[in-house]
Image 1 (cartoon, rainbow, N blue to C red):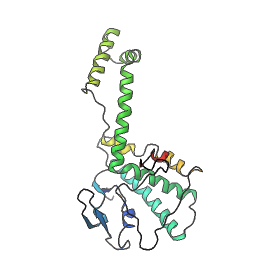
Image 2 (cartoon, one colour):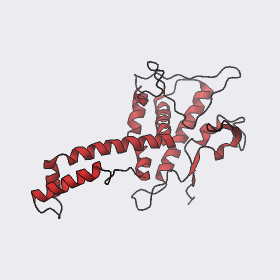
Image 3 (cartoon, rainbow, N blue to C red):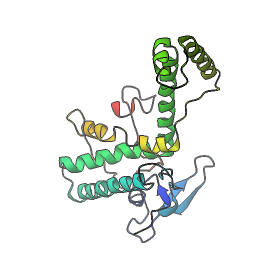
Image 4 (spheres, rainbow, N blue to C red):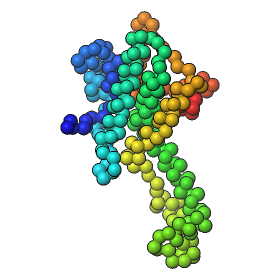
Length: 240
């Protein structure tokens, strides 16, 4: 049985290769710009946009540790074939291939370091709101306390609620999304959003550069633009 890959690309190699000077080379290279220093250098696509074990789950979970990376790889394979077909034949994609590309786009948006940080922020923000709402509901708190062995009386339950609420507001009790939560969160609603992107409300366009012009690939390859608010890149994400 082949060993699981240890180096995980958050921008797939098949996509990086398409931006290389010689995409068909055995070891294609791209020019990489360091946004902090302004320096650029030629780099092998094998060493770009890669983090060790970035999608590997912790031990002890029900899922095998390498499942997320395998799922991403499977999606990449189908999407890459659809993109090659689109490039070579320049024809409208059938639904199955369009869905494959849409799913790839959705996951590509969520799998980068910035995408994972955004999910973590939103997930923790919603959890904090829910936690405070629950702690302020003395009736539901009392009912929950009765289901555990420590429940002694309504007065004791109320005391525990107020103490926990105080600790939460003072930052002594926190809510945190784990790396496993970030990884599994990439796949939440991904198929549903992909289906929306393939619906009648969305138009797809294929853009080709002219002459010596070239596209530039970022380490967050999926770009959002809201023409109604051009000064605010991103808008509402896929809802734009």
